[in-house]
Length: 612
Image (cartoon, rainbow, N blue to C red):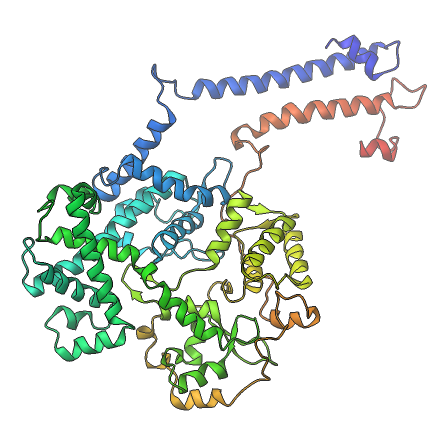
């Protein structure tokens, strides 16, 4: 644009000499700073490494990164095929899409742990020790299976103690593969010890010999550290009876093992290749025996153990939910709580599984003592998902009660596809879930208002992976979604570590059994989801707290307009200086008539001019 046209645009024609000079100055200023911006872009392009003559595609780069990461962790990148990586990526993709990310599409450490933990929960019903990430949790918690087996991988690929480190989807896929590998290797160690104790050779085993070895393995696997030493030495008949007697439906477990062995044998007969694929990739070439073989090897046993550990959570699912049904019969209305008096009364009547002490329940975060009128109540989902109810207590992983709320969260993540959603959308999704299970229930007005309140604290949107939303879900689905305690208020302590005080004495049980609050039957409308007694529904929200915790607290979520700090000053100059210059010119144009050759002072400018 030429100076004269600008002068005529800004000032009433004819353009004076002074105004023309000012217009020329503005043109020079704008041109100079626009040129500075172009130079900065050119400088950045010049400093970036030149492309190779044959540029590599994104797929090749990703594959190289995955292979190098696996090489660091496992010493080989052949532990998984490209097809297997694609399968894992597909299973991680929905949750990954909904996680909070920075401008480069990367997540923080807590989110990485969260998505990997969700994978093992969904696929195998397994909780990996140290991965139980949640809003407000410790993102630097030690993952025992990795710190014991892949310290170099932890320090390099996972960037050690760097709290600001960010990660991509490839990192999540690699982490899944690495953990799967080492969990399987930990199971192998136990089976090898069983073989050594029974003095079994590594091949040419009969069906009966393999069954005995796998039965011993399963006993050690299920009782964990309690009797492991005695079972792996020379167990007496009494020790075996104690162990098998402590496991519900031990005969069901033996039948499960027998079925797995027969299934493997059948698979080997009809399709040796598929049977080999059941083994870890790096030992498939070691198989001994083939189609129609009636003998087994240690590697066959490892393939069967791999299948047992992966499918045991699903096998035990009926036992888990039978345990829950017992609690639901004692539930107080539809509050998701069992009065402690009913809980210990059931224990006195022979339900030994409800014998945890009040102190231990408090430590686990499974006791609600917020209501003075209702008294102490056992929070059903927190209690069921507590470590005391896990069926497997391994050094590196646990198999515990299914996380029912995960299914709801997956519904939200798939439908929303981003890290936050409008409260109206979430309400409609929750109502669809409720309609699928109980058409007679609906969300109360109190809960609707509470979700709107959460959205107001986050600029109109509800973060999916936030403590307040998880807390809201607990009151919407009180028997399925656990209450999210603030960090440090609940601990996952094994009964063996807590000591004898983890079990209530008969005196304590009797005391609580007689301390009964006013009873409310199961047909009461005093709950969050009927909506028929809204005034009373707030009675159940005494545990509610307004403290917020986000999964991505440590992640800087850059807005689209945020640029690299190195170039921010350029864009501020390019956009800011011309705007200021034009504003000054407009101010000059609005100067009083007759004084057009005098620059206006701040005192002479009107309030409107100052605002502009």
